[in-house]
Amino acid sequence: MSNPPEPYDDDLPAEIDFSQGRRGQFYQPQAHLNLPVYLEAEVETYLAARAKAKGVDVGQLVNELLKKDIELMEAAR
Image 1 (cartoon, helix red, strand yellow):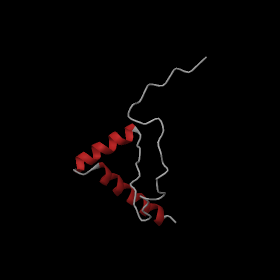
Image 2 (cartoon, helix red, strand yellow; image 1 turned 90 degrees about the horizontal axis):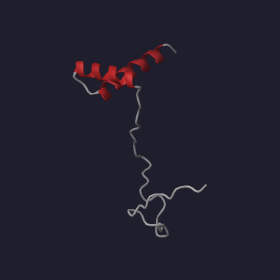
Image 3 (cartoon, one colour; image 1 turned 135 degrees about the horizontal axis):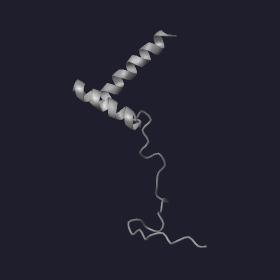
Image 4 (cartoon, one colour; image 1 turned 135 degrees about the vertical axis):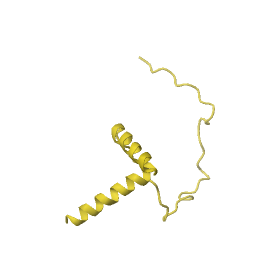
């Protein structure tokens, strides 16, 4: 059995020439990346409702909760 042909994509060339590329051209050693956090649906729903009730952003609420958890963990050491 043969695999069906992939759809033609005219946005990309058949081959890409990297011969003139420079390694690390955009590397920034001090760059700070914001990592995505994926919440379970029921957790997200709960936190969104609590954030709305407090008049804050969900991200702000989550950071407040995590900071409190960190304080508790450090105090328990």
